[in-house]
Amino acid sequence: MASTIVTGASRGLGLALATELARRGRRLVIDARGADELEAARARLAAATEVVALPGDVATEGHRRALVAAAGPEIELLVNNAGGLGPSPLPPLARYPLAELEELYRVNVLAPLRLFQLAQPLLSKHAVVVNITSDAAVEAYKGWGGYGSSKAALEQLTRVLGAEHPELRVYCVDPGDMRTRMHQDAFPGEDISDRPWPEESVPGLLTLIEGALPSGRYRASELLEPAT
Image: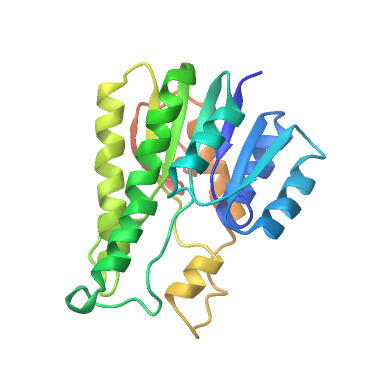
């Protein structure tokens, strides 16, 4: 049975997507840095499908290799959802600590690329790769230079991978604003209860995963709009 890898699946968008994929009977390999939250997610998902949960950091090579090994011998879907925000409150680029920016790039850019490199020999015919991005990759928001530039780099890598691997569908997806812990960290002390829950972005992701749209960049909200 082919497997699906979803990184950062203990909460937020990763867990919401993994829940829907479990309902569809996909064998899941999930990860997160927090072992307790990840185990709670595994127990919840295991009621619907086979789940392997591996606590760890996608920025480390050993953990990435373990994810791919657990998903073998065939991978049908790779979702690079795990990511970092950087310092909170978000600093302007003129004062951005370069060591923290370098770590952010390791998590948001190099880790997804390396997971693809490791998974590529095991990807099934017409497999799907989904890299979760942000509107901060294309819009210039004050304070979002570190996170936004890392997501912009991820988007360019995604486009090139799509061009280099026409046999696959390789997507970068902007899920939109969501009521998540990371989004709260970006706005410390502010009320973000007006943002939609991450579950509202999942149908758009499933449209890509289960459809036949060409590789490229998509916004989850646009995938839900009726065709004209």
